Image (tube, rainbow, N blue to C red; front, side, top):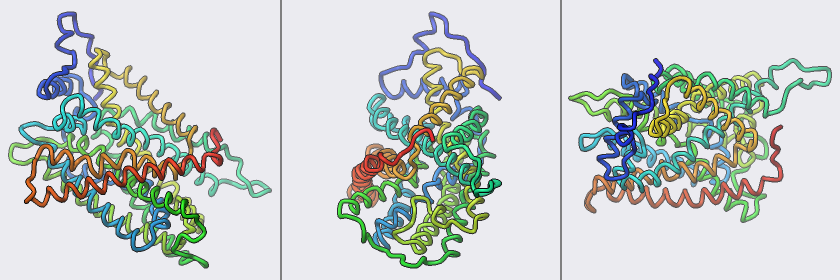
Length: 461
């Protein structure tokens, strides 16, 4: 059901609807008022079940970035690659658990990541600490997944199309397929809230498991390729170092789900005898079981088969049988449709919060306009910067590095204040140290990759 339109407040109501800038309690009260009155996308439906969180988390975490993990392994090598995969899995699960546990504290529910940040650091500073990296991830993934979806559609068509006498397809360029992918979202993006995306998210979660299995099985099927090596021979010292930096960013990119975890948990109903962390963690455990299979299976099988010759998308390295590659491309397309929507919903919520604070109704006409414009915006940028591999490392490090690997632990230290004798104290500092390291070196590696490959990019193909 669409949110009702609200007329702008009268002159006497302006101050009551003006966002407070004082203490956090006033800010939270104001946000709750907006949630109740305007049916905002994150909080308008709290009837989700625990299994909703399972497939929402699978859709958010197991993104198309899993297909780039073998390429990351090619720079890290077997020992370091396995260590990085295990550490990233353990740390991301721990920091996700921290966020889930902090969703309900001191009699409050923190429905959005930035609300928790504001509670920890203050209304103004908290918003500036959380929202920039969170928006980098969510908008960046919208652009990246538009590229991925368009590329997968293009590849699928190239495989299954009817060839002419010269063995070629009559196909438009990549930009046209990105536009086709974006056109699909012009319809789906009108879904009013998270729970209305449950069917799309379930299909996307199943597809992520399916194409990851294809990538694993396809790599095993083609076997270890002749001349496969597991080293950095052929790379200069600088290429090897920056490649390792970018690989760390690529691994970070694979764990972006923290950016929407509190928003997903906000869809679960509050119960007097049960904290929402209980059903939420049930879903998280299921999701991370799927993550284990997808990430470790694809990474190890792809790297084993192709070594340092593996491409940034392992499906391209597999290449045959053609029907299997076509299926994988189709599955990737369906998955990134769901992932795009899951990561976009919090952005839409931020936009609507801003609109209603400025006394602009958030009913259907408004949603049709601004949501359609958002899809056009991400589609346009996807056509302009269609380089998936380099984007993974840069966005992963600059955005996902903070929001996944170290900001949750910083917030935990601020709010929970564990003593030095508590193991959480030391665990938090380990997460912070490693997370900041990945953020710095991964951003450098990703940016260097974009600059180094800039001459090969073709826009508006």
